[in-house]
Image 1: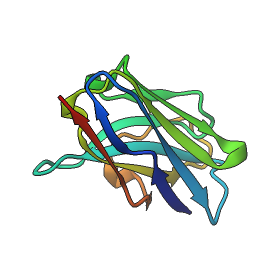
Image 2 (image 1 turned 135 degrees about the horizontal axis):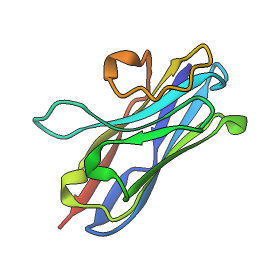
Image 3 (image 1 turned 90 degrees about the vertical axis):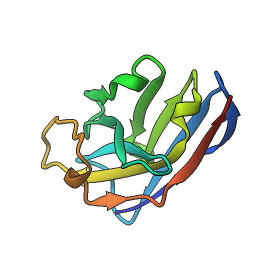
Image 4 (image 1 turned 60 degrees about the horizontal axis):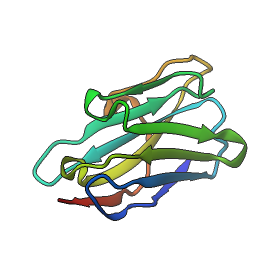
Length: 126
């Protein structure tokens, strides 16, 4: 699976962005997806994850209530809707995917994912 993340940009505090993750090369059916981010000088961190069917989602505490992860398996797409953005959300955001054999888990560790997109920069100004 090849993943292409897009939708990043510069936004003011309180603004919104919608990140997209387009998959190619193989269907996303049975693949769990996740979004991670890495700020300058910091380690990559989990942001949000979604099971292969979309039935289960999980968020890191700092984005709960502000970010929403979703997917459109028919169109091989994943999304991260980000509202109420804060300067501390500034980072490069990466989408990731892994085959699940049909389990309904949401994977939160980077090591659990095999396929990664190239990253898209999100900058939130204060």
